[in-house]
Image 1 (cartoon, rainbow, N blue to C red):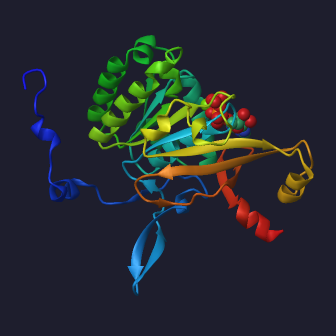
Image 2: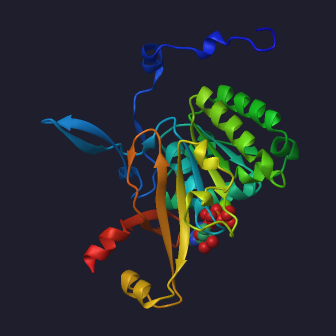
Image 3: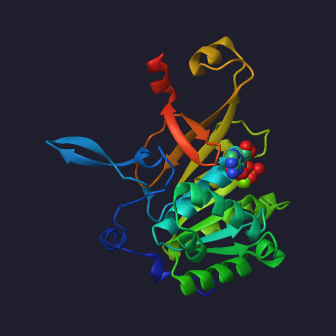
Length: 288
Ligand SMILES: Nc1ncnc2c1ncn2[C@@H]1O[C@H](COP(=O)(O)OP(=O)(O)OP(=O)(O)O)[C@@H](O)[C@H]1O
Ligand SMILES: [Mg+2]
């Protein structure tokens, strides 16, 4: 008691908690090949059958991780453009690159994607933490700014590129920062994509790669983006590419909210900068 109060609000019957749980629903990402990797199971003639969710689960908070140049920014920007095109409001917290630069790149890609410019202009709201150090360094200032944006614009989605930039040189803060953002996005019923930069040195394609600092345990799931160099005859045969070439790979490393594909997939960045997820390595092998 006293300094150690009983927190009545934290207690709920399973039944009440269950009633408050949101309906499982997919949010289309506009990333070819991604939306069908999430599914839900229905019973059909006594057997469970997978049906595609057609997107990432609404209200999920995902961590996207990979080393430099793997396509993390392109992927979250493509998601933001897609949702804006569908008339939904997206907060884009840019931590690495000032907002005007991000906007310029997104405008070009919106054209290629066939999303009208005015949709992107009106439905994406930037918080420029690259240019304003207070929002970058003071997490409570960032969350107050974000609450203001969510209320003012009635947003549904939040992108942070990158959360790593919010704890630069303060790596011991990583879990705390990510947990604060995670809890905040849950409270405000947002779907969230958080980019985290993997520093080379961590095991390349593991959950350690998920930002390292146990970020993966806090969020609902992780997307791992990876590059692999063709450096053996085995890989040469497998990918049908000569030694020295590079392939991009993608994997969903856990999702708490629904079923998901867990295989490693080929991943592609088109000339115009659109990302697209290809066949799994198992499918590729079968074709050979
Ligand atoms: N508009 C574009 N057209 C074609 N290719 C592009 C375009 N923009 C980026 N790319 C390619 O995609 C790669 C990945 O870009 P992206 O910025 O998404 O990487 P990232 O994973 O966010 O990297 P970082 O960790 O450095 O932020 C680039 O290195 C570039 O080769
Ligand atoms: Mg980036």
